[in-house]
Length: 276
Image (cartoon, rainbow, N blue to C red; front, side):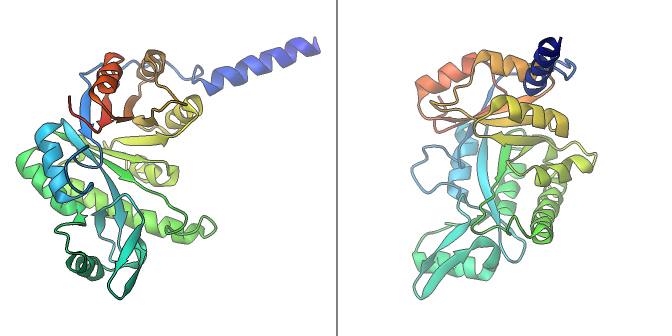
């Protein structure tokens, strides 16, 4: 009898991990949209720049950009939390660098628009491509972001970033075409708590089942899944999340063959280096 009881517990735990305890709420399946990774994919220039974003909007169904926040609470496009030094300036963490310092770094480095404000990208999108999509990848790097051990500092930082993003999406009426992507559940929760129609995607780097269950528990709109040789996405994965009412972004496809293969299993979005 004891072994039967243990066996039942194991089945329940396994079912919970796979999301089987959540009701089926199938969603309408739409055509897969391809987003330019870091703005323009294999754009012949710097990623996460205004020029990359322009290229991405021209050639893809939309773009994905990585974002950071300056000490002025301004959102900038950048994958790295650390800004390289230039001249006599040694460099520093984005959240400790002012907007004026960022602009001076651009001038010093000789690059045009090396760093671009998210506001400038959204202005361009709203004016030229309001029906396309943008995925905002909110990064967490412990080396620069507030420490995990300072809960108040973390909350204040991500709450300020949340306020900046929501203000811009409302200003340009782009909330319905914007995906908020992050591994930071505390940050995504802020969007859910507004009871507004924001689109939250939990970034998953390994355990698909665990990430899917978390997204369902947290009432996010979907997941953003890293597809690579150790974590290969399948049609079963896609069907599962769609059956449970979630949408999915898959990243990153590196060539046309891989893009075509991923399209066949019909994820909602693919972050890609190539557009065909």
